[in-house]
Image (cartoon, rainbow, N blue to C red; front, side):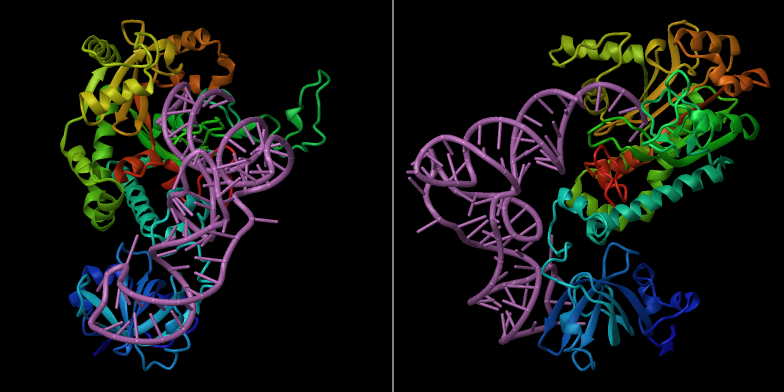
Length: 487
RNA sequence: UCCCCUAUAGCUCAAUUGGUAGAGCGGGCGGCUGUUAACCGCCAGGUUGCUGGUUCGAGUCCAGCUGGGGGAGCCA
């Protein structure tokens, strides 16, 4: 019999620990493992004892949705003293032979020859993660342990799969990943309330002669905040590297209490030079299809679980998504569709009207009822969009784009940027902003300006869409929301 | 920030018009079984979120507070 791994238990160094078999690897190619010996390391899910002189211990190491079944014979020296006291959550390491499973439900299992318990569960009666259904709300309160459940293990693997697919997509398409700053001195990004970054003494604030807080004495010598977007910064590198993207944390101090908002979330912001809004929409469509196709290929086990327990539609929704062409309509056409819907008897709480932003109910109606799939809405009235968005020839709309998805609403928000300095300046003036604050951003329009475009993709919103999870707090390891920063 | 809902065993939930707080799961012990969120029996487990009020009597009604959820706004 081939011996794949080092036999001894106990502390081992990194290279030795690599010799342990990942459960996903054994499941992927059972024929390679049956008839060999190895080591399985993981946490107990369930234990069933048989009087035939053995116990079945289901163990997960997080590498796959399904746990592997260990068959533990009663003649092990620690059988009565330890094995029979294993409960959900215990950390163990088992050495034995991989064999074809005699039972249903798995192809390969381990016939255990020795088993070491690294850590028991102190009080099994109060261990928060029991082998039974728990509510999402309860699991949020034990976020440090919830990743041990089926649902959150699946979320974790899907999250990783999508993150890697995003980087792979950009890398394969010649984009450079840009690490834009987390701390920003631009208090003018205009994307909402910001968290202040300061080392000043709250009890003893330095004041200016006019009685204001003297930020010149603060760490950076000026008022600083956590970033609400890497866009303005990433545009600078776009003007040299042509195709760039950011993928990092973003912070919004808005008092938003919804299932779609976090105070700290991750955002992907590509920026492409020599590109217009149509190219921007193409990029968004291509990226989303690529990462969801990767998910369908790589995480079938987890998606199957989501389809069974969380959202029946999640796999078919993704399959339709990667095949179908995105619907693209203008804002003006969208308002038109909504007004026609009202004429046909559709009821909205708010009247859709050209010139004001669409309400959630309007966006929902378009993406869920009219099209039943993602829809890109472009060319919004300039007065409801940011100063940097490119003014269209009609003089009253800008080249903005929102991609709406069923069940979530806005998943992508982007635009072609205003590359003409004179137009940008008049937009800054119009909105009551100060040109001096944007001196370096304006420089980009003075030194080799070029049409360019980009968008922001909410990473957690993409995960919600892919999994059918209902609350954004359940697709990030530790959610930060108003009045909640536990863990 | 606004509107609505909600808080009972480790977890998920019951408890009629206000009248002594119960089940399933999980846990412990035993039985049975190459078992699959197994099955059968027994046992333990509660200051009903907190503070106050109404009442002979409050899990139940009222007020405030705290936590949680859903929706709206803002947005990704």
